[in-house]
Amino acid sequence: MAALVATVLAAELGARALAPNLDPVYRWPNRDYVDHEAGLARRADDLQVLVVGSSTVGRAIRPDALAAAGGPGPGYNFWLAGPPLRSIDELTTRVLLDRVAPAVVIIGVTMRELNDSPAARTHLQAQEASSAFRAATGQRRLLGRLDDILRDTSDLARYRATLRDPSALVADLRRPQPVPEHLADDGFLLDRGAYTLADETPAHLAQERQAMAGYTVDPDDVAALGHLVDHVHRQGATALVVNLPVTEQLIDLADGGRADYDTYLSQVEGVTTANGGRWLDAMAATTWPEEYFGDIDHLNDRGAERLQPLVVDVLAGIPPTATPPTASGGS
Image (tube, rainbow, N blue to C red; front, side):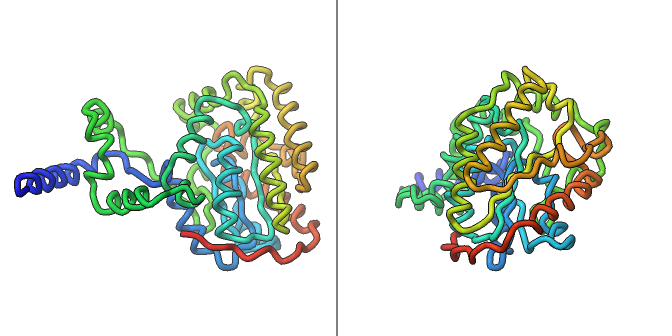
């Protein structure tokens, strides 16, 4: 027994020595969720506006700026990196709206979130399989909760999958540490604020090209948007879907280019209004020269400043809603 204890302790010390050089292991699929959970919790008690979507909306809509311009507040922008609409729908309806009760839910969309790419499927699967999502949706059983406790206290337990696979361990040790993303108190993504299209990295462009390959408007993502809008409406809140500005370069990455974009736009607007949501086509509301973009699908600070008044104008025209139901809370 003493030898077993000594072996375990030695393995634990070894794992702790390696841990700073390994990719972080989170209960959610990545750090985005973890940082946003903490940020949302700080505003949960009096939250009036919840913004959801991809990093594109993370750079586009700033809740504190909406409030400063006369819109409702306080608010929080809970964006994710690279999700399909299915991920956004499941996270919002099954987790976030059990924790907060906003009067308005703003759903930022681009055509990218409706393409059923391999990366989109991987994102959804990782979210559904994460222990945090399963716990929040009542799927985490006793053994799972005990495993969470063990992972919280032991690097050996936290990194067990990587440590059991030497090739994965070597690959993880060689992989550069992820670049941290910087969030404002309202969840707004501060990175890329001073960028222009000339600053776009080849890696990001390749990522977007891959995400848009084989483009088709996925019926499951259209249905997910309809479900999300309907869920918000049934809770007595207002769902505002915003078609976010993107560059022509992004649209051209779709196999059908502008024809694919028009199909996306028609289906998204149709499912929004059919389920009781409000609609803002920010692309059509004003012009979007290239100087307003930090890359092909993210606004820079100048672009974000141009967008906020458009959103405030729509919110100002929405009649007061019934008092939203009290959130049930959550961890």
